[in-house]
Image (cartoon, rainbow, N blue to C red; front, side):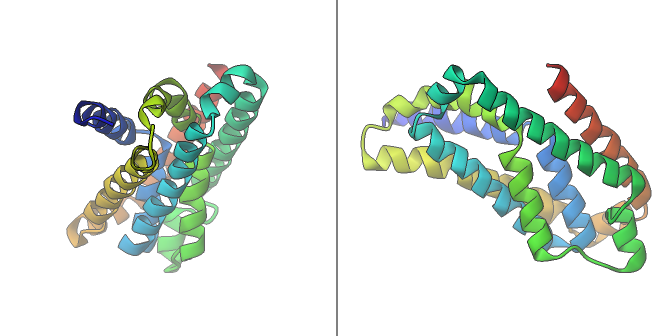
Length: 203
């Protein structure tokens, strides 16, 4: 893999990582509900899901999805269902951010890891990214180093970017201000998550 190819891969992966979506919402909610560690755990588990798709790209993910739209649709519908469920919980505050803060109850580290992993694994946007863009670079992974870069680069960038978001949101002043609006954040998160689910189902 040449330096120019790596640079292109880096830029494409970074832009894909920084695109706003349900992943930002999930990292933000878990950070505000549980603190910095929970946000970072969510970010890292999200990166694990991204790493799985990166590895599958090397194993022919793009070819599989192109030849089997049913498989892609199943993942999309599962992701939409999970987003709709999270949105419903946020709107009803069933264990959501406002309930946890009011009760003084934090989400567990396992819950944070689960949320990050599932929101990544069931995110059609991530699948489309690896199918349409990332897969174009797989052909340059002609040796072990190239294959390692293909898998690790998106994992590292994803973990670092969302961990930075968690660290920013967990700053004392920021945390205090946002927690005062916990109910509003829950409601807005619910609307956005359900909206994303509807968008996935109607595309």
